[in-house]
Image 1 (cartoon, rainbow, N blue to C red):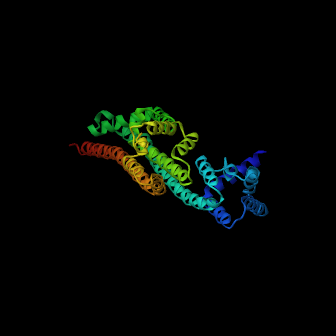
Image 2 (cartoon, helix red, strand yellow):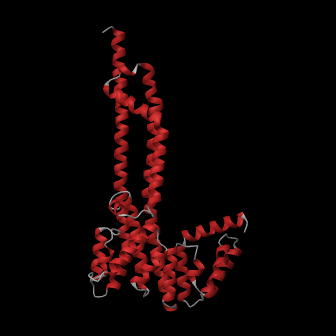
Image 3 (spheres, rainbow, N blue to C red):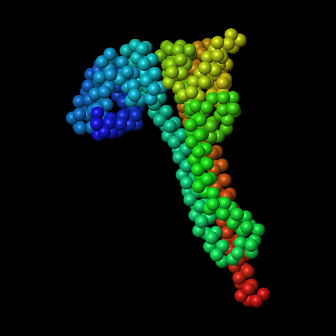
Length: 358
């Protein structure tokens, strides 16, 4: 495969990921009408090839992998691993449930994509705010303050101007170190999100920005578990399948859940989920579901409705984070602007007094 073919495959796989909810829906509609899976994929491949679309290469790959009739195998490497697990469980429940399961998958994926969009916005806005704020601060310290330095010696500046000069000098002198340190901290933070697991991490997960990642990961786990249990897979088997494709941090929580399930003193499985992965409200919901007459059915309901609720929680957390960042940036810029104008005004008054001989 040359570089052009690799690029075409990457582009086609990316397009499939973006519209996979529609893909699942169309598959479900065709399977509901008793059309064989292989026939459906063959039709998609022929149509894409006739239209000279890059997706033809993806459908050929699906056809090659789907020789054994497994949709999960056909989509391995093309869709997220969590969805491959759910597809495998859906297909294992029988052909009669395949279409219903894919309709459910299409609806779930739409909600998951919306939640991904919320998370991206939660990360993009602070990043853009930081870039704009940094450019303004460096520009102010590098161009505005030096103009005042050329007019009057710093020793004659008022107290607020002296503070402004010290702050601006610090930025001009150490900005590579400051932003280099920040880049290292951000790298460590993002690296730690899926990997760091410890009692200290459990405490930090309660607060921003770690709480956003925790709420998102918890929602994905609950949705995956409820989707698997909906097809008849037991809770332990669902957890084991989820653990196989989880990050080290999430795997640590799942092992804690297994320990809780093995605890004979815990009368309901809800106690096992009190590991710090779920927020307090979600822990209470899982606990209540485990005490119902049909705990599996109640747990599935939580999974179906959790995405919308977690989406609102993430939006609220993102708004709090953005408000804090705006307040900090606004306070620093206000200090710099006030210091500059008060210093300029003081210097102007001094120059006027000298010119009038007062």
